[in-house]
Length: 158
Image 1: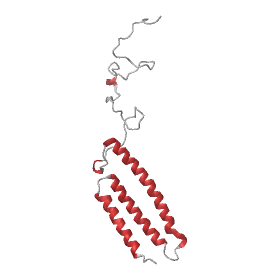
Image 2: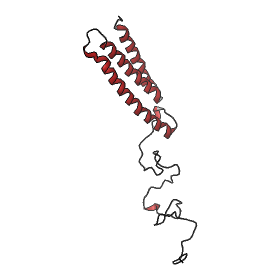
Image 3: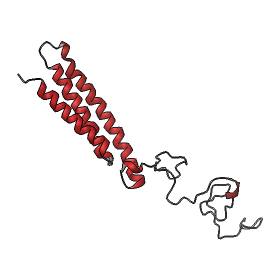
């Protein structure tokens, strides 16, 4: 039978390395690895505590499965946030975390905020010059041709 101090010492070592990874690293993926090390240290301690003779209902392995489930959900959400941060900024450095909220509606429907060709229109009354905007449409929803003069009354009607 294994002595209980060895898994406890290994768990403390894993937790210490994980805390160092969380506090000392700037890369978001390395911080996540540190968090996972801390959770695995807790799992090791739970399994060790539950494996002693006479432990009621194997509580250690049951709690370990619960911690693994929580860790999987945590890593999924964190990696999704890191992916959005990388797509917006091109890096995953945590010292320069950008504002990931989206104040403007997404015109392109791609989920990444303002379009690359956004003209910076604020939508106030000073932005009503449709002849300069190539995206403008007339009342019927047809694209507005800024280079063509408006048709005279009755012109083009047979």
